[in-house]
Length: 471
Ligand code: 5AD
Ligand code: SF4
Image (cartoon, rainbow, N blue to C red; front, side):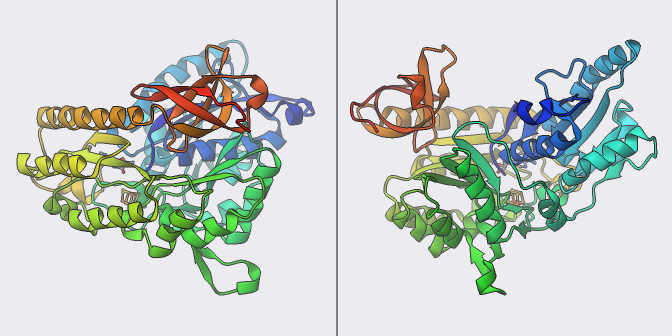
């Protein structure tokens, strides 16, 4: 689960690499969720000591990594068309006497393995999400033409143990992966197959990484996991043989001086335990924003999706969380056109959205993923019906998002300043509810939490004025 975006990771590590005599260039293109964004940063980290410096174009790069997403069919297809473009660049580089290596990482790599190299011979290397620490070795092997080019077995524990301890951060916000994989087996989803079984990192490791991020100026950390609230990591050494849940972990991390804001994503409704809900009540570093996918409003469809809860149970859960944190803004994921979804079932999704009210949402047409139980179900919904339902759902969700943003006009929100705006003369930061917020102010406020009175609200962002005595 998670937000689906496409981001180029080009965080440079010039200081470190300027030391390397033979600097090579690395271009990483990231598809999909925040977990992939995090993984791309870690790949750049692991390659820095062997001389790879990030660049922001694949043209002429020594190594091109596509960190892929498999969650919907379109996402996987985009990778193949990008590989077509990369092939031309590889040929161009070869014509001028150079070599470009091409690696496909991430969930498409995990799911399709050798098939990728058959379909796109431009690819030199395929590696699944648990093998990134072995990248330098694998690249060396490709260079020596040893032919061992596949590395998609699951070994999560090793991945985290062998990643370099040092992370380079860029700005006051950072992601931190605390959990990977998923055992929920929703019938539409590839994640349990591509990312494997649930694995939680030990508390000590997470605390050390968080402290290091804070020491580099990070003030907001988003804890990441495919099913993050299923977190059950080994307790610190003193409490050997015990496991902590996400609530306890967040309370503990909140004590790190300088770490002012925390978020976590993505959660499954069935794993929202009372301890975590209580943390929303008592821990003010935890932002009043929760991404909690509902997927569908009809109990029949929820059952076919193997979500493990009814709509009434979701509604009760939301009431409980809102009682603990009345300021909470909810976001969600929805799928329309799951096999067997009738017009009546779909209307229940619309009713659920009306009833609960979401501050923002992601909604998708069901896309049959080979190998998942959903793909083999009878009653696949025709494409035009899916499109029509998606349009109706998005109209409602968009209206709710705009209404929520507009309800903030006149209020003063705390904003963590991340950067200057594109226009240059303004600052950009995020509200507690994650909206991008634009306002006038001096660049020395970057990295600070300021108070901004909201004067305007659009679909995707807010605008406001800096309050006096803001700091
Ligand atoms: N088809 C459509 N949407 C999907 N998602 C996951 N798998 C599929 C699929 N096969 C959506 C879910 C999930 C989000 C990250 O992507 O809504 O929560
Ligand atoms: Fe996929 Fe369901 Fe696991 Fe989320 S909870 S990653 S949708 S199987």
